[in-house]
Image (tube, rainbow, N blue to C red):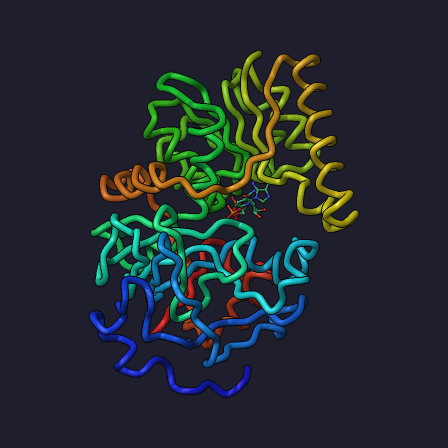
Length: 365
Ligand SMILES: NC(=O)c1ccc[n+]([C@@H]2O[C@H](COP(=O)([O-])OP(=O)(O)OC[C@H]3O[C@@H](n4cnc5c(N)ncnc54)[C@H](OP(=O)(O)O)[C@@H]3O)[C@@H](O)[C@H]2O)c1
């Protein structure tokens, strides 16, 4: 890890001087974790002189307090999405954030300087949140749940918005429906179980043995250990929606088999990025659209179900509802361990080696 210059001086912590002419800020550079090229954790570089762009009218400058590590961060670091990101290197990793508003663009109305906020960037954002100052659009942020610390809040948005996208925007689950979450032990799966329960749905899930108690306590009616049991024989009945966070051929087959006609199968392992990486943007994107369409048609005719690749999207109404559920103690994603941002390489290494099951959060001083 290169030597660090001092972290932001007291000048950077003042609130009022940030706002000049509506959107220009006094923060012109800050510390950030750069990804100069793809590889292992050792390629990550914590730099102290990374430019902070001038805010656009709809943008918000957030002083980071905590950012959580998502699987996308470690996958991006290793080269996933290289067809999009390689020409843009160096990029800054990180999607989730919890922090304090340092400046707002001229058209921002929903948050003000000094507000505590949480949110998440779109999966393809190039300037991520592993930085003392991150830039998000207004619609990607909401007030931080008051009862949550910054560390707890930073674990929520990307995972919960992914689950929201699948269950609420795509499958449009309603009270009384049956939902199956494959992989309920992970961050997205656990959020999906809690969102489904909060929507009045009957929920079954698959997870490792260590997660069963947690998922039953969250309101799942059945939690099946995928490591020891044949899940397709243990899970009872049929479902209106299946969210498959694992998305391997076996879970896809089981998920589709367990759906009612008219139900929705949603996998988080859509092939758009991997096919684009393999064949390039020009060929890969239309090819992946063709692959998806073919699967959608196949399953519509063979099983009468809707098949989807689900991707996280910003959704200000969804994030607001997620905040309300957090405050009502109906939604939480436990944080297993925190690292200071200076130890970002160690944190990524621990995630790569599966040394820490569960959420890891990077803290800023
Ligand atoms: N498409 C998108 O926009 C999008 C967005 C977010 C995430 N994702 C992807 O979705 C996946 C989950 O993300 P996450 O943030 O929830 O990751 P995570 O918190 O690291 O969770 C992964 C969990 O998967 C569980 N698992 C592994 N194999 C399983 C199996 N065969 N059956 C059931 N559970 C299994 C493990 O749970 P146990 O502890 O119970 O064993 C593990 O904790 C990742 O691959 C991620 O890249 C995609």
